[in-house]
Length: 245
View 1 (cartoon, one colour):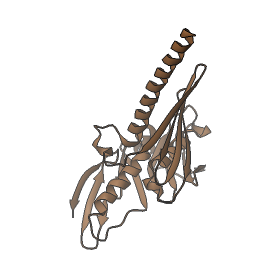
View 2 (cartoon, helix red, strand yellow):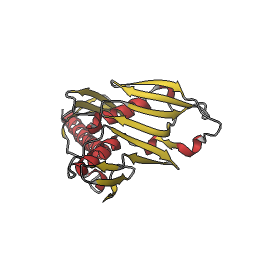
View 3 (cartoon, helix red, strand yellow):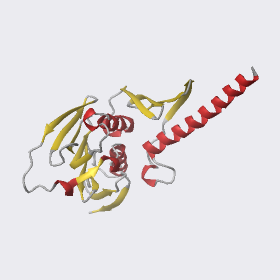
View 4 (cartoon, one colour):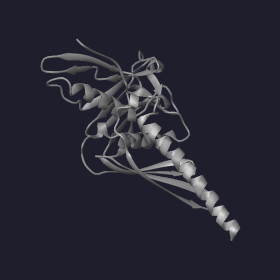
């Protein structure tokens, strides 16, 4: 009996440690670490964590509620599973969890199983829940395919017609170096500046242009009734430059 109690106590301690590490991992994924100024202005999340154990398998579940989603993030045997349901329609671009869900869904497509994903030229995010992007074919690198995300699902591939003058290698970036959640960081930082400018409105479209192995976020201008400002962002979505034109 003492041995069983000791075993249960040890397991509970291990689960709590695992759960805390997972909570920190999700927080850092969505909002950055405390030392990453690019994410400091994002709203804090409310979460409730419980853990269960069965045999040698351990899982951690985290429920996160925002104004736009109720989401359960499940960490099971080293795999992150995200169950996402939208509760209101406040906008896709402000919904970090939904963007993370879309990225994970892209990575999970059978065509990319065990393969690296390379985005081509640009990626477009729309506030109505759509994402449009082009991807290098995982088996034929001279081909480019189009994928479209809407209503929580990816559709594609659709073949993209290329010219003999297109240099694919110059406009590729690994998905590992692109964070869909960063689109919401761009959106949030843009809107915080726009609120200070008379007549400026939130964008309905955030997009990234790929070149020289880097992604540059747009739009880069905020137009008010009386003023116009230039704004640029680093790759993680933090404000890089901001000044009146």
